[in-house]
Image 1: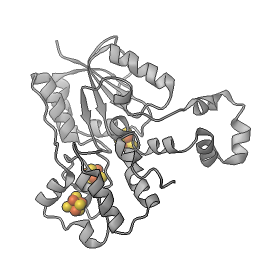
Image 2: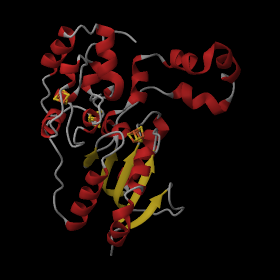
Image 3: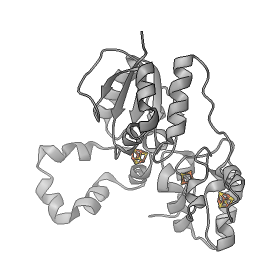
Image 4: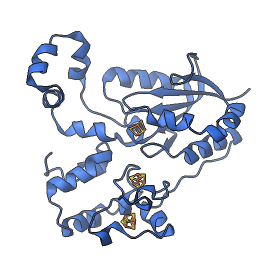
Length: 263
Ligand code: SF4
Ligand code: SF4
Ligand code: SF4
């Protein structure tokens, strides 16, 4: 019997599911190892039980949390897939703004008046707080990043099928950045989240000329005080620092740093 695997999406762009489908060179080999029983992006089937459930997206409404709990109850292993599921991602920035203000910013005052009576929009008013998957149910493994790293996905599936323990990077992005012999962006006059961000992405953004914005969330034991002091020493004010920390990580403790700097 091949393990039954399912994919579910919540609040997300579905980019992580596409990243899985884009593993073209190895997808057929993986399909020989597992039986995909639910995957809205690719098939129409459903199943009552899953050996492995992959969850994409953040949890925004109570009905999402209920659906997630139901999936958890029917899954032997549950994997949070991508930054939305692991750390809340950009949508969790709305946690720092009142729902009514959020609505106004997205739809404007006029539209707000028009749609307020439309039941289709009522779930938006019911939105309370964007949560990472692990804030709602027990998570067995996390595939971090926006989007996830395909090599980590393949490694996890192979490990689960083989019955071995998957290993993921527990070091900071800086380690991989140095291995790629990049010039540090601080030396270019910019700032970077690499010191406090969990590696595993091969510092791809810096290697391609940008900086790390922290999409993989906090590295274990991140020295937040030192990083905060570093950003301050580079001239960033409270608002800029809060925006940097909250870009991906508003559902992590990181997002709560610099709370005095409002949006
Ligand atoms: S982590 Fe990024 S790529 Fe994946 S679903 Fe969320 S927004 Fe899309
Ligand atoms: S560019 Fe960023 S990730 Fe690379 S060494 Fe500098 S701080 Fe670390
Ligand atoms: S370098 Fe930073 S922002 Fe880029 S993928 Fe890695 S963790 Fe994410």
